[in-house]
Length: 252
Image 1 (spheres, helix red, strand yellow):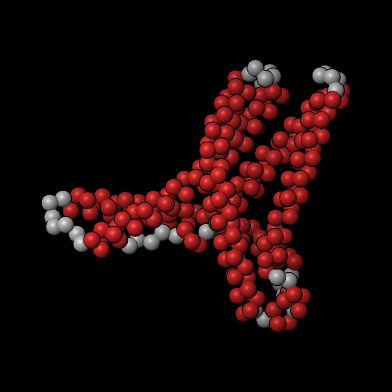
Image 2 (cartoon, rainbow, N blue to C red):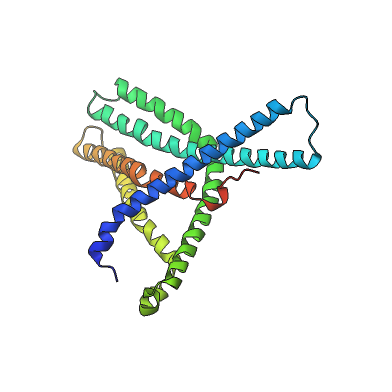
């Protein structure tokens, strides 16, 4: 059985492997899109003036084109929404707070630029939100099933699954749920902190000690949300979206 020190030492390698796998899958999608576009462009260029292809061939090409277009549009919605969320955190919320604290208040140029970034990010998120929720839910369910199947296969083939009854009693799906518990706990804490700060700001006169404490608590909650979004939420959502097994493209 692996020791706790060995398990802790392997965690950075596992994280790095997950990031590299995500980059590989994302690069494979880009190459697949480029190859399909180049193939259709070449077929169109050399097909002018030649014999008309068979109806079956035309149907295959049409299905391949529609399939590629569908995956391309879903990728634009998913990755565009995540990019807008990341930009809102890094280029909107964070500079807005720093502009108020460092650059001279709410009328500074930094705050104005942050508000422009927030406005643009909101424009993208509002329009992509329905499609993003649907597509990410599909990818998350497929990802969870894929991960659960991998864990079942490892438990079935490993000797530790036979010698450790406690490992058999624990369902693989619960391990995936347990990964979300720290994220949910941190999100709940930040939300409660932000609500407390807003209530203190609204119930006390501006400039009082209680109002200033609420002002600081609101900004601390916002900064914590930015860190959670940039370093935890968006990277994990990107890995889940890119490792979605059903979205791999195939050339006809």
